[in-house]
Image (cartoon, rainbow, N blue to C red):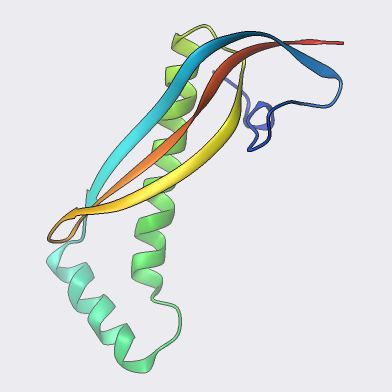
Length: 110
């Protein structure tokens, strides 16, 4: 599996050079809010501030998408990912898609 310190939003790493661009690596997760989560989230909105139940849901979805992307890149033969990004979209009532993606590459020390 690719180490998290070999994933960057930039397009290179100090002291390493990209020797091969392999292709797009991605991880996707679709999450839904439970009835209990919606109820607790609604209660938290009454008082304002951070809606922790939704924050935790988003953090977990991002983590899962990130891990799936790393696994995808490893399966493609990469040892690093450049140009890493997250995107999320509501795709239905209470359904959110979280996508992690980047360019799977092979890097070697300079």
